[in-house]
Image (cartoon, rainbow, N blue to C red):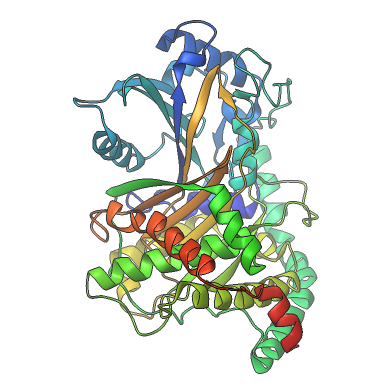
Length: 475
């Protein structure tokens, strides 16, 4: 297991759960045979039994001297992973949100493969919902999409997008061998340190230069404090929203920005409205951590998580939606240029130094002492934008009519917004610590409103100058 993958294990506490979730809404009327839970469960088992990520479990290294390894679960039983529930009456959106929030707050069993699905029946006049959980040690945004492809197809009766092929699982080893390998691995860390110091120093020098020139990405520990920036509990609140991808693209085209610029500007507008409604709007802009996939640039072959992060101001201090979008476009371009100048493997390289025992104790001490409330917030929230399928897909024959991703929340940043496109719709998933944000719906409900405001602002201009062209003229 890579250091970055293992870090998500070390970060986990009973309150800070490090799994990612997905709410998958299915229309069972498209299934070639009538829906039944037993058939769906059997179909899931047949599609994942040869996929290592679904059938491997953790094996700890003696004395916690090194990161755990993955080994095959020879007692794999799909009934331990795929469960059946029914929504209470009347089986609507409110009941679904309450149930999924409860499930999101339950830890995964580390003695088994780190995933589970809850098949929820009785939603919205016959729809079936699959609530999926996978530990972040197993997936990031891109690899999570790839794993979902083992269960989805382009037609109800077609083969999966990615057929399962037998793959070799990690080789199990004796405790003596694991201990010996751990000693060698720890002894090699000084060599690893020497190898990554030079590119890290180069990145620091580059950052200093960009900061002096005013072209650096926003810095952490400069975020204003909000009600969702403190010590979190294990309780969650969840809310979902749908946006028309055509509307998002229309704004993008009219302003010369990107879809990601528009998504971040919408999030900024929604957060501004939410905080203003509560009388908590800070004078300075909120700061988001935005995970970025480096899968194509990474030199590493091992590891499920191949991500880095950039920091983005969300323009919550700007009232006009077009002005906010323009500011986001400029700052995002600078942040991307800054991010590209940093080694793609920097985060993975440094994560190798995460010591299992020390890291875990530090996280628990940080939570127990409530240190998140005693220093400036590093960030306010995490926002992810994950590309999804541009055409209809079918989950074991059931048409996917909703695909809402949900990421983890952290001490100090008890809010996560994740966005995924799916067949012309942008699905927005919001998850928060319930004590920090009791009603996530009060935030997510502003997303459609903010998109309408942007569309109206664009339509109200006689001639909208694309922001990218405006930057070119200014330069």
